[in-house]
Length: 470
Image (cartoon, rainbow, N blue to C red):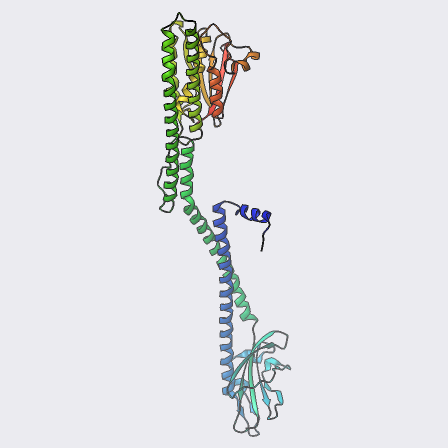
């Protein structure tokens, strides 16, 4: 038999809907409902059978009393003195308790109502003739004088005085009271099982909540890893879950090893290239009179800057989205401000921090944040007349770092151009034009951005948006 590809794809892609907790709880509740429904049917049937057995036992006692009171007169006619019967209902018309004596002749003809209780009044109990051994009992369900349901117990009798005749003595009673008691029991049983079902459902809910609580712990541990607070899943987990935790931590360790090996290889390549570049630079410095020397020195500097840039890109590509990445902003910013203060000490700049979100942190490498923020601060210090201010705050899952200065600023129509690689508005100062371009590309690799605007200090406001480590 073949199956259409669409059917196979649909079967392969089908999944149970809902969460695991809802599925477990739903399965438990369905099982409880089926179990309680089955228990209700079984117990109600058991009680009904018990009531009918007790009912039949009472009828047999009545039948034994009638059998003991049955006598035959001198003419061979049966006699039962009603005054010797103990139950007064047998004398009350249509009371629901009846007795009757039938005669069955040798040829099988039945003469009904030879004797009967006063409670039958002018009615008779009609039963189909059936073979019954002497003294044997039969139980029947029939209809009473007023259409009510009756339970009838009969006994076959034979007396020595009339060996050719057989007598059928029967006692009947209305079953409404007994069945009403069974129905009442069924109602109480249903209410009791419903209450038990509610309690069991609450117990199942608590059991599911307790049973799945380790998954909540795993979720919190994974969130800690994703937010960069830890590099591995940490915590106490049940024995059944611990192998999964160990395997996941093994994957994290393996990823960390791969990243570290990639960094080492990139560093080795950079060092291998820097050495010949350094040799070329030294050779150019020792021959300043040659026209080739300035060109070699300039190109060596550009090559070194490009090596540095591509190393940064490789580092970001290797560590992007890696668990455990968290770089606090405050200590790194304090170190950069000290460096800038020394680097531009002769200008008397006021380097300050503005609004700062407590525990602000970057979800990435410290070297990358230092590269981006260092370039922005260096550009701001070069352009500022007297003040540079750095502020940072969280906006959702983003870290917004703003560097403001009181310099001449950049015209709006020129801001897009200065973010491109190699573009410099001020050619009088040394540089390669890669500073802001490096910041833009590094930020984009992390899913962030760099925007330029007018600062309230009067100069340029550079706003760096990066993923935040919560």
